[in-house]
Image 1 (cartoon, rainbow, N blue to C red):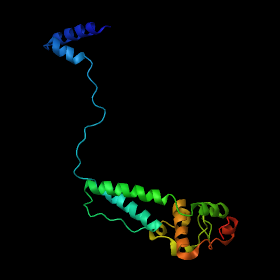
Image 2: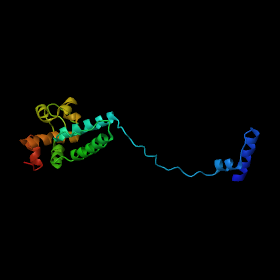
Image 3: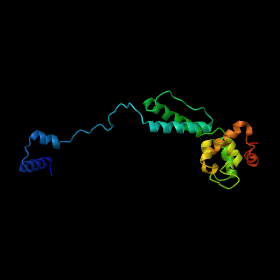
Image 4: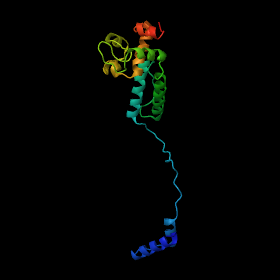
Length: 184
């Protein structure tokens, strides 16, 4: 069907229903409309979701505590857009740092000889085979609340080992495997 025939049939149907129709209104209704702008209009945000900002802040603090950084602070309301932007950027920065522990290759080599990241065999847990006293000494309270090393992510296990390394233990808690990896 051509466009004019559709218009005539529509006018006829509307006239039969008792609706008055002008040619210009019919043309406007059936002509192709220009596409609306694809992006929604920018509405200035005056307040941020405080719950989201708190979540970002606590995640940032958890990673900072794990990797040994001082807590970040911002003197702005949690409901401000400034706080939302700050904590969102800060958590990304901290996660980027946390993704690359300083001795990552060494920890992966030790893991290759030790066990699975989820190894739960007593008396040693996790991919770096940490015992209870080692975990109590070097793990953060957040990690210990979640259980032993077999419940932590590989990155968290490596950062706990890195904390022991930084405090002077070096690779000596893993004497045999550190020798296999040429770390001792």
